[in-house]
Image 1: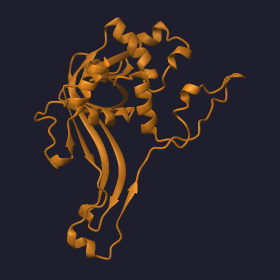
Image 2: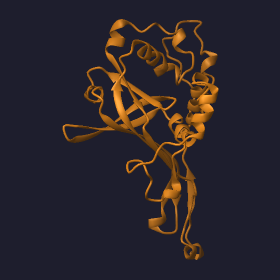
Image 3: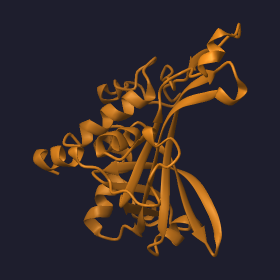
Image 4: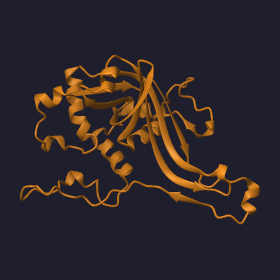
Length: 245
């Protein structure tokens, strides 16, 4: 994607429909690419919902974004992937819990959050060039340039792995970021209320005990340093791999 295309993409919004339109608290709903993509890029875990023989399923899995396309992968024997390889419609969701909100009334207890629902038609990646990119991207999207230093994936590993892609046809984000929001009269009550921030923070790296002598942590992993927010590390890694968005 060129810089011009990237700038255009981030000025655009996903179309709304009965599937993705935020109806309850519509003031919290967003459809523009910039907000939807930022929430997606701040996570590596999603949940994919689909239906097999009338039975709904929801599977957690790692994923990544390339422009307006989402990718995930798994075992070629996976029931989920075999179903989605047939071109089934799916819904992919990502959610971040940002704070716990304790109000002066039970019904006003809440949470601050960011969430995305994305809809599209899944397909099996069969194009050799696209699959080759996916084999690299499943690592380098999160850990830039790491694939170049790894043992090459062998034929059996690639054969046993299926990659699924989905062009985002519709998507919406829903965001709450207001903390305590009580009824006006409740602020006069002698009841304690607060907002408790929630963050996923990286711990200290723990080197493998079987490292060979002289093997040290590469500088390319400096973005994953102790005390850093995971979502910041993930977003930075995304723009190393996809500088144009």
